[in-house]
Length: 352
Picture 1 (tube, rainbow, N blue to C red):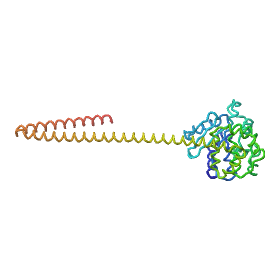
Picture 2 (cartoon, rainbow, N blue to C red):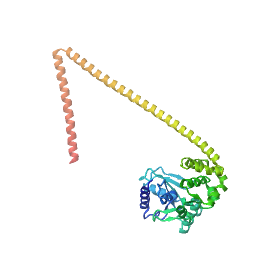
Picture 3 (cartoon, one colour):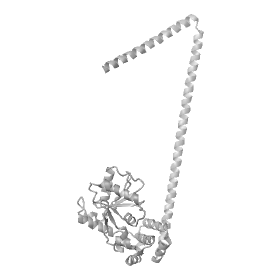
Picture 4 (cartoon, rainbow, N blue to C red):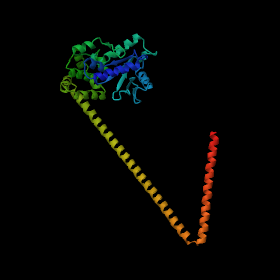
């Protein structure tokens, strides 16, 4: 998204939380702050709510205000959510909170000291200092709990936020992200960050294949893919990454084909249902038209039969019959008029 849209969204969020309990507790976090400081287009916006169970509480509040769509997602295992504002239907927002300290929160809200402590711990579990910045939505103040994020952005350094063993133990696929960011921006890794990749490279083989597939897919889609692969070759994991990616890519292709077949089957069933409906309507129309035609024929037949019968009578009998018929019609007409008159009087009395 452009900087203009990014600033517009931040102002929108600031306005809707103004004078609410969320005003001091909603932050931007991660890549959107990095990209805004680098003055490049922002790919997505992640929010952080410094409340116990802040993500689902904030999302539920937005839903109660009818500001987001009903299709929001809640990832109970991590306590995070994903939603779309009705004003910005094409953008998804991820919301997190310091869930790793959930067992320490018995009250409704954190104290100020708890909030800073948990936000610092959350920051230090992120992969890189340049991705660990927080920005207060209400004030616009940037918080650098790692004490190195802003300097590393300025000096073009790729650095882990804390001990690589902790970061990569939590999510080994972060190694791929570290290499990708280094080559993407053309920045140098700090010595300890580069050494950490080689010291803990075996953890990558224990990572979740889905995460490895997603991160390595971003590598292959990047302009500097060859340079990234060279680093993976030096780490001794390029073949593993390629095999894992190809295996999951084959499964993804198979799944896509299955979905396409399912969609095709559904489409055919829908077409067959519509064809049956069309035929039924056509058959009903034909039956109706045949009934109307038969009714018309019966009427014409009765009229012809009546005229023939009337012509067969003697003049005296014909005249007598026609007089009786006219008398019956007159009585029926008088009866109808009398009924109408009674209704008019009854209505007038009710209005009076």
